[in-house]
Amino acid sequence: MTHHADVLVVGGGVIGLTSALELAACGHRVRVIDRQAVGQESSWAGAGMIPPGDLVSGLMPFHHLSVRSSELWPELVSRLQEMTGLDSEYIRDGALHLSAPGDEATAEQSVTAWNESGVPAELKQGQELPSLDHRLELLEQAVCYLPTAAQVRNPKHLQALLAACRQLNVAFHENHEVQRFERGGDRLEVVHAGEEQFRADQIVIATGAWTGELASLLDLEFPVFPVRGQINQYRLSHPLPHVIERGKQYLVPRRDGVLLVGSTEEHVGFDRSEHPASIQKLHDFACSLLPELRTQQPERQWSGFRPVSADGLPIMGRSVELQNVVIASGHYRAGLSLSPVTGEIVRQLVRGESVEVDLKLFAPERFSSVARQN
Ligand SMILES: Cc1cc2nc3c(=O)[nH]c(=O)nc-3n(C[C@H](O)[C@H](O)[C@H](O)COP(=O)(O)OP(=O)(O)OC[C@H]3O[C@@H](n4cnc5c(N)ncnc54)[C@H](O)[C@@H]3O)c2cc1C
Image 1 (cartoon, rainbow, N blue to C red):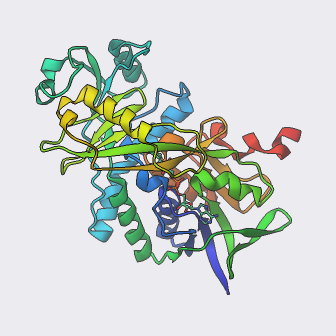
Image 2 (image 1 turned 120 degrees about the horizontal axis):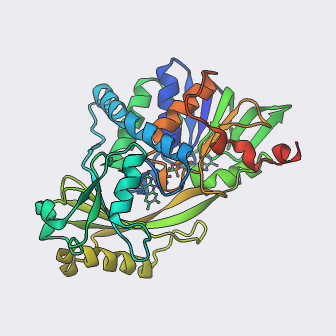
């Protein structure tokens, strides 16, 4: 059977679902195809932290992308709640950044850097954080506090996105793995998934860590690889008031007392097996900050595959080889936080609107052999 659409979105993670929502809201007939139930991969597994910007990459366009996305979150979640009654549990509860061993920048320098980039940041001492002072070790040192950092409960957010998409008549084809494509000149004509065929004016590729594999079916180069991250879950009788980060490790407190402790970076391909050493490493980290966890074991743990591109930056833009294909992938550690701005960019690209964000740094052609030959 052949299905037709204005836009076909391949991949139903947070990037694909947000893109589908934005396009359907503008009146396009959208179909989403996923090889399993949507929203089960990295987007489900992530911790849901939404930083107010990015100073890690040292790249201002990436910082601006992150700032823009952080600004879009409140409107997106209230729109979803109005449409569906579902709460994504978005909270702007701030984040404390503790210096990690080997950090060159002191808390004072971090505060200055954030403020200079336009993001509010404050220097805090333990006694200025009375709700944490007696619970958290290491608070004798000054810490950098980002009051506009936020978090979202990603499994709930995915449910809200899915429900809103359904209300806007987005058609879902779950358990359909894209296995083959038919090209016609500089267009992608047919997408094959099992016995089904899909034709669309425009096709959005949002297949996360599997984008490299999918692109190779098209003879395109989109070097995107999985970086596995594990999370331990605990339960606290009194939730912590803020997200707490120390280097690449963090504590993310949900409102109901659930505490997520993440995360690892493991280059193990698509290996889903449990790694006890990683679970222990996260446990040791959590106990080093929060002594009350020393008497607990994680009640649950899981892992997910972050999609990382060869240069660590997202790939967002129209393919130079295939004129009706838009790529939105490679968001690495920031795919949840960057999903609103990515949905906006995909909508603008598909509809031929001007894109406000400077996309040069994220252009798909930076990896393309066609571009390299020119
Ligand atoms: C432990 C961990 C913690 C994280 N914490 C955060 C955080 O705090 N903040 C943040 O912003 N980000 C975080 N991230 C990163 C974030 O989760 C990802 O960047 C984001 O989810 C990527 O979304 P996606 O839609 O591109 O990919 P995914 O959610 O992986 O979705 C890709 C979809 O494509 C489908 N697919 C793949 N191949 C095919 C095919 N051939 N045919 C059909 N469908 C296909 C898959 O089934 C899947 O549903 C974290 C990630 C992990 C693992």
